[in-house]
Image 1: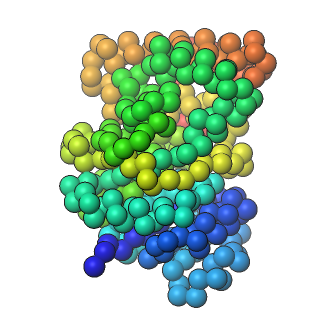
Image 2: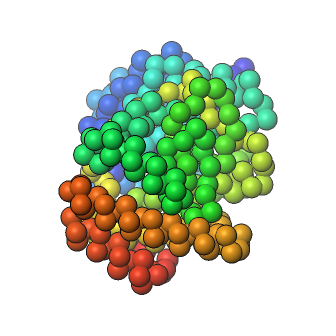
Amino acid sequence: MSDRISFVIPTIGRNEELERLLQSFLGQTRKPDEIIVVNQSDKFYESKTIEQWDNGTIKNYRVDFKSLTMARNYGIKSSVGDIICFLDDDIVLDEHYVENISIFFEKHPEALGAQGLITNFESGHAKKVGGNKFVYKLYNIFAKIFLLNNSSSKNKLLLSGRNQYASRVDKVINCEWLSGIGNYRRKVFDEFKFDENLKGYALGEDKLFSYPIFESYPNSLFIDPKIKCEHHHADSGRPKDKEWVEMKINYTYYLWNKLLRKRGFWAYFSYFWANLGDLIIVFFSVILRQNSFKFWWWHFLGYLSFTKFSKLPK
């Protein structure tokens, strides 16, 4: 008998995106055993798609907190699956997504977790720099030099507290961390949980959760490119402007301090080198009219003040 598969989907007011995701479940070649929607908005969400499932597969919970990490932990406790899968609400699934998760874990009994491939990763991130693919490629080059987040063929956590993201994978590979579309065996949650010190949108929560699994159980995390989806990066629900900059700086520091500071001199050097690189790249984005000078100034003040986790935005 195959493992039961539960999906946990935190959401906060992105009803159109959530409805599109739930619709993509309807066309799956292998239906999920359970879908848990953890709604953090002030109003109860009524979905037309939920009504199309007449067997209670979709469980719709409204909670009184606004925290991605708390929502994921809540969904885990509410689930019954042998495999617990996570999705952002602005994801759209390939029709074989659930089936390929089931196949992967059957073929790899040694795996504790796996994620799939976001097929529109690079085009989606190019939109963040105005849709200019040349500018995005240029950014990726500078990001590698300065140990910042960059598109790669592997999921690797850098000593700077930033990461490489596997956007170009054509076979099953091991990795060091899983993104927000990670899928885990239930026994993982007997030992690990999402860090509820992170509030709200919680940038980097996926690495804070999954990298310690890699440290304790090397070669237990995987990427399978057959598990495919698209990520459409909804604007709503994300911090903006100064709040975004503060979150990026503070949450990156928190991650580095918790996971990498213990590595010593090269970790310190890498962290400050990446901060310098981020300032330079944001400055060039101002010259290219992708961002305002005020946006760069917020970065400058944030890095200059060495803002610590005690000042994290709520």
